[in-house]
Image 1 (cartoon, rainbow, N blue to C red):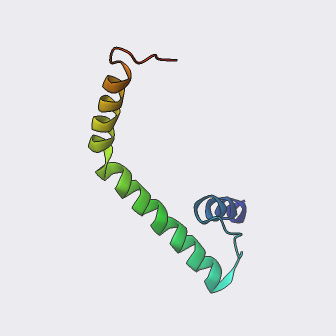
Image 2: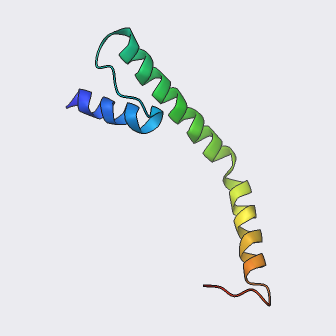
Length: 69
């Protein structure tokens, strides 16, 4: 069960097939964890920017002359 979850995690994050054992497998898991931590940091650092951009987009789309679907 553990290997299945690691395999799924590596495949989803890195797009690679999990090696299963040995140094390569450890490197894959470490790389996938590092990527996820970096993605989390980018997400958290940009929450405010995302909100500002979304508000500007919503205002632009609700301006007179723009039809919403």
